[in-house]
Length: 593
Image (cartoon, rainbow, N blue to C red; front, top):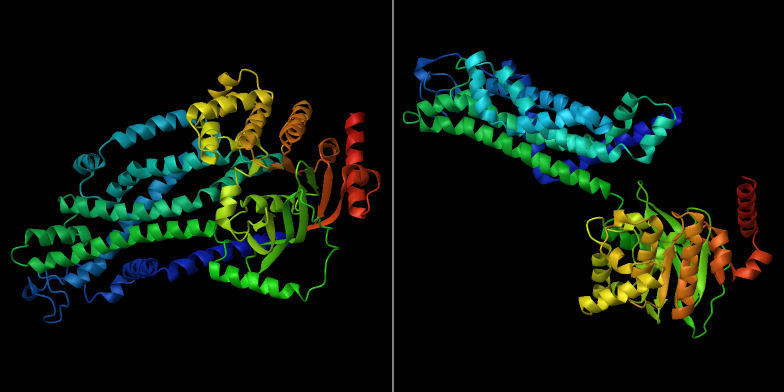
């Protein structure tokens, strides 16, 4: 347990250092960080950096121009050194943005977490109050507050923090609502974690990045509102904040026009750099989510290194026997797929796998989770994750390598090669009707009129077992069942008359009765249309019922290939024997239950 905790701590530090490193490498972000750090440093050590107090007056320095008589930036109308007042004013500015940020984060994030996690009456009341607060004119409220409190900067900034807290509330609540139903949150409840620990450890961690980004804009707004209030004459004239300096220098602009330049320049640059820092931080955090995507130059070097190393490495397994007959539609040769690691290396997950798919053949690809089945299927379709790296091999369709010809692969996807995914409900767009999605997909693959596409799809929906197909075409995904959604996806996959279908666990999310119906549909379509099919599954019962040929994968290698009857009767490899034994054990347990 200690080791796991230490690893998480180390990973968290590594992530923070990576974010800081990327910020520093960004020139704009680096300048913004230096400026903001400089403001904080000056505010902390103002008594040591200034030559005198903020209100120390020298009548001889009144309206003195810059670079004269020891006054670097000159003097104001009262004879006070402008540079010293800017140094002391940084304290008031830092205090203002600190109050605004703390109050708005505390109020907005706390209520957003509670409303998003618990929902119910609290969320309803909070939403109403947030709508009311956001409809109020903030600057008018602050002016009205001045009549009650006078020139009290902390109170004004605290009220302003409450006025912008709804921004945090809405941001946090929307994220928490989507996170609260995640499986890892349910798992935390099951193991007995309290709601406080779940929110603090899991939910709050999911909203940390948006909060940090929003806080940079909040601090910029705090500086602006403090300067604006002071400029309107609602600040404390005895203080030395940048806003007070701006207001006082404006009143004597005709006597000393240069004096207004310095506070306005400092305010503008600080606000600008805070906004730029927020934008840069947003870019860095978004790129961190894609950090596993290796740069193109490193990808090429990794592929070259992997290809050079393969000649000197021992063969991990006997290569599959490949057929050279004319009925082979798709051939996968020596496919190798890898993913980058955090240390800069590459983990290979598919190690030179070979596969032949014949016309009209249903070819099962089985193995345990993580064996590389989906990687081979996705390589055929060209839909591997962006971070995936093809280290070698080919996917040949009509003699053309799809891996080296991305244009041909895009053209083949959806026309020559169809796809039936798992989790049917999550693969239909909830914003559009079934008919609109199917028609758009078919017309993209095979140019035709909307009427012709509609008529063809209605017929196909009826073929895959959907009654009243016209009505289903007008429904939204949430209005149909999971089994019907899978039939819709099968219809979409075959609508463009492909030569081969890649079905990735097409029955996983369905109950047993619907599974049997879907398998029967796939078998019938294969026989009617001469469709070749790659069926990715871990269910050996599905393989026995549907497939003609089976390839067994283990650790990224195809360890055995045979006709389905031969494989079930006399499996050659120990791994295949264990898979069959496990499947039989599960079946016996289900029968006993």
